[in-house]
Length: 116
Image (tube, rainbow, N blue to C red; front, side, top):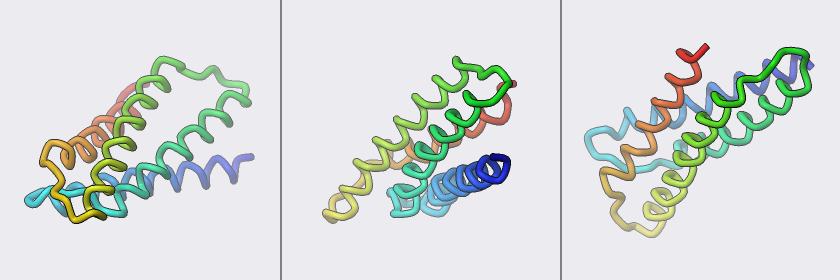
């Protein structure tokens, strides 16, 4: 069980890095990259799996924090899906949408690390 949790945490961090790194890489010409799209999917899937493992464990789970993080993750995922669909159709991605993907992911990272 420890190996699975460690693996999921590593994948969760890589998903966050893909979203945030993609945002920084395209900051001057905002868009949504395939890596941000994939990172958003990885974040939601691994996050839910980590919550499931935490619920099965002996320690209490902070459900309010999990709810806040889930809301941010879903917003990032929806924005990434919309943005990436526009990219695939060669349509422009609005600056607000592109920055929402990275900015909301950044806020979610801060919630994860600063909320104890």
